[in-house]
Length: 50
Image 1 (spheres, rainbow, N blue to C red):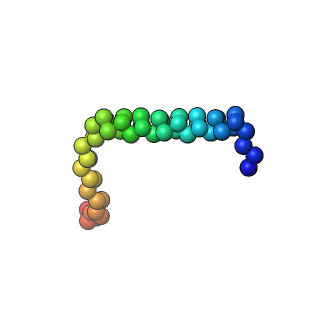
Image 2 (cartoon, helix red, strand yellow; image 1 turned 180 degrees about the horizontal axis):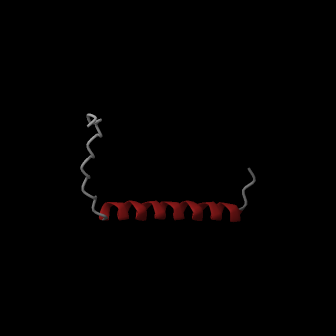
Image 3 (cartoon, rainbow, N blue to C red; image 1 turned 30 degrees about the vertical axis):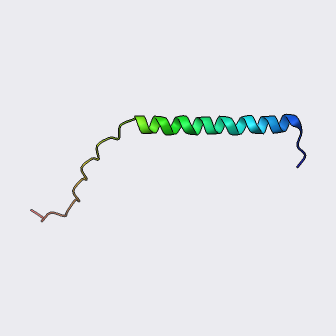
């Protein structure tokens, strides 16, 4: 592939931006408290005919 100095710089900038976004996403996920697990709904069972 033909690489120019501009394309190398653009690729480097793109990779740095992705690393920054991944790091901030990870930090945000660690800061937010996890919700309590909900109780599971009981299975519906057939009832006897009245």
